[in-house]
Image (cartoon, rainbow, N blue to C red; front, side, top):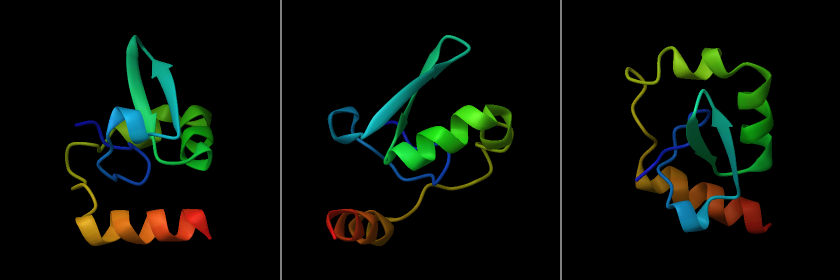
Length: 69
């Protein structure tokens, strides 16, 4: 399961709002805002991706609820 490299939410590819390819790898995003932030400076988000844990399930529910609002 991929995770958004900007906000670290675990995503399902079918539910992702956007995607972007960087150095031959596809990254998935929960919103177009996260995609735009990543595309401006991908190394900022990839350099410490291994040390930042993904957001928990409550965060995913919060984002979904506020995206619909």
